[in-house]
Image (tube, rainbow over all chains, first blue to last red; front, side, top):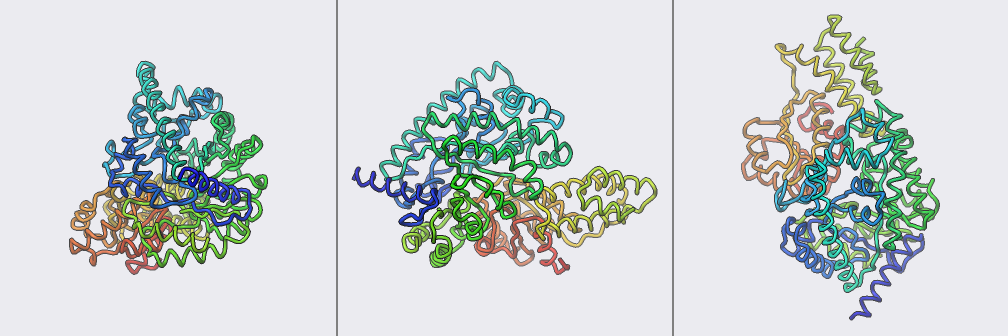
Length: 407
Length: 210
């Protein structure tokens, strides 16, 4: 059994690596669905999934046993993006990498205003949600530009987190946060063990962030930032440039845990016209990606929403740089543009899995794979990995079976 | 003057647009006419978005300029009635706490002449039902960002059916993760994943040219 699991993991890893290296794998790899359906499948509330690691692990095990795939990318960790904390701790690589995900217990400890957790601000059945906010004034860009880490750690976080409001509160909060980090890391170790038992490749995932997203998501709020771009363009641009170094320090700290793949989820890409994208978003994001590639990482970028208008800019990256994971961009068109240069990931609309029938899913996967399978360099995945708790399980099965048949 | 205001809004010249609108009113201009011009400008911003010339950032900035001009224009119109083309009850569905999509849609719907009753975020099904009973809207607009919202939309449509209210309203769903199959699944009448399309469809739903 153990050797079988090991073999299976190697086979799955080879499949993924072939796709990432722009080769044709034995079968199109599937990154499976996850999200709310994982706890729901075991009768757990979202609250239990976020706050009880033992139950969460068991739920993950049940789900991954019954709905196997090559890469359970969306079926693990129940934390929300914490990149502002990564930057705040970027001078301390051993700490910085532990805050990529802010879990429910960490959220409680911080008392932050960025997240909403089930059983806390929202009902026990709700998904944890990021809403961000505005914790920096428009006239504070100079401070951000001058010393981004100092400004974020000493000015922004005390505003964004009730339990960091004063140095005295912060002392206790940091001790408690350390305890939660230890618990979370222990759970991650157990998760890795579980993955190995179930025959999944152990891939340590690193991370980075687009500098403009850091400002939009954690400092100014999306709407304010979009207005700032028009009102104070030079300041915004200088701020993105100032954030590259701390983001790189955080990203490169993952070398210490042996990560070779860095994940960057994008947010504002779809909001911007090509002109604004090329001026305010892409230059510093590109710099982060290229520097990671030069340091031996592969990078996986999640292009949220529709990225059609900016597709060609991806070709400015070095060939084989990594994986372009698309949410709503047509992957057939994307593959046409990026063929031989970038591994393309995505293709399954979550609406189809939630609202479609097994026959429709079979037909859809068949048609899609006919177009994107030839030549390799493709990973099939839901456009967004989080399946609602009422997702019909026969539809998830149908997806897996269709990939078996046509992959 | 009105032409210049229209152009400034459409071209996203925030300061210019607001300055000229103020000058226009200070010089004795007709606030009703200014309102109409601002609405036309927003219509053009929406049209450019649908053509792929404009992006979300322009929708948000356009909405911001419109709101700022309305702040000093609408009080001057009170007394005279502002004609509405229809009424929308709008909310982000249960278990979803995001407001950005709903808020962008709201500005554009209002700019198109709809009266919008905003019932907030994380809105329980019953609250939609009550709002429909109370306000008797032409349209119910439901917004969501997260995928879990999709099932909340379905439950809300079901609740409206149970209450016998489904046939008295048109239902449109909106948000980044809705599409045709989500529309089918929820039993809504229309779907949109951007505000400009959403408002155009709302006009169609009530038989006003979109």
